[in-house]
Every structure is written in structure tokens, then in C-alpha cells.
Image (tube, rainbow, N blue to C red; front, top):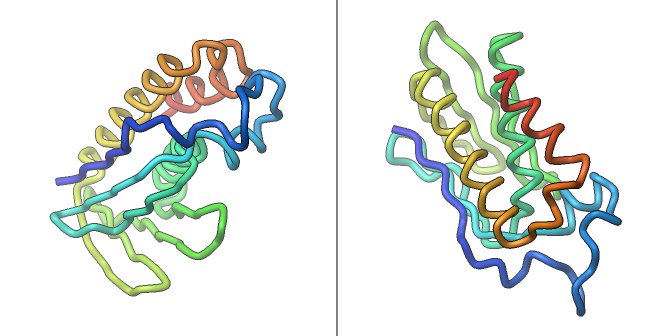
Length: 152
């Protein structure tokens, strides 16, 4: 079983003071400096990621890219902005093997199960972000994210 969750606490969505215009931000800045949420990824009952302050929008893109890489090449990575964590994903038939670093831990799940969890997580993440920040709907990053979701 794969579960990917994020906190709905939007207290740390916007950096600094005031209410910056999210549409004025470039995609890279928006992905890395905004929408900090608590994230938890569990595969087969093992927590492979738990971060109290990770940029949600960046993780949405990262998970979709990992899914696309696995589909196209048989392996992918879930990598993080601060480069302290790396999760390798390798396809073996209909199963996926996740290997984490710096703490070495390996777990497995079904490919379809992971794809469904990623899709549900991305849809929930986009819904949450656009509900809390309606202006985000018109940012170029959202159609890009939705396009990537449609590809996966």
C-alpha cells in the first residue's frame, strides 16, 4: 500500500511578511520557496519520507517526473531541493522498488498502486493550493503540472 499525504496547514505557504503575488513569481521560485507543508510518504507500511517543511508544489512535479521516468526507462528518482534526500525508484516487472538515502531502506509496491497514489496526491495538492490561493490558477506552472499529470 502506498500513501502520500500533506498537511492542510497553509500557515507557511507564503514566505516572509505580507501577501506576495504568486503570479509574479517565476516557476522555480514558486516551486522551491512557497507552499511549505508537512509531507509523508509510506510504502508498504514503511515511512520513506517525512518532512515537516517541504515545498508542496515542487513535490507534485517531482513525483510526476519520477512516475514518467519509471514508465519510460524503468527507473527514476525522487529528489529534493536541499539534496539531503534521494529516493531511487526501480521497476521490476509490475513491482517498484524504492531505495532511500542517506538512510538506506528498501521497500516495494505495485507500479499501478504507486501511479494511483501519485495521481491522487497531485489532484489533492492542486485542489488545496488553488483553494487557498485562487490566483495560482492563472500561473503558468499549473497548466504545466496538469499536462504532466495527463502524460502519466
